[in-house]
Length: 197
Image (cartoon, rainbow, N blue to C red; front, side, top):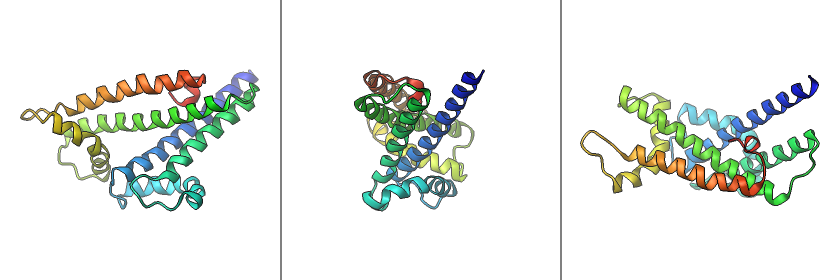
């Protein structure tokens, strides 16, 4: 009973860390896609993640350019440290450093792909139900996915009212997730559940 409670507690902690990693990567992608910083949802993500990102801004520099290295580093370190802590708590000991580093990269890649996956679903639903929505959430989703949609639209322009680019992006997300992230997880030798898959 005690061990079941303990493992349930570890699963909960791991899930909370994965949600926070998701928010950190959302902050990273919002800045990379130059989404509206003053959007209320952007501001919420920044406020929630700033305590951790602030620790890294001291030596990686303040947020400025398109790619926020402090946020990326914060997500990577948070995930690696949490995996080490979980391994120590369950009594397995320290996993190989190389495996941890690879698992950290896999966790970040997985979080980014999940964000794009869910944003694409929301964008598709919005295009059917409310194509001209002006809600802050809808605007943010559009700004987030546009940088990955625009290059695909150049290659595959919309056919009248039908835009095939979301299908191509979905297939690409699934391929990268299956091939790249899957390979990283296997190379790391660490359970996919711990990484966040």
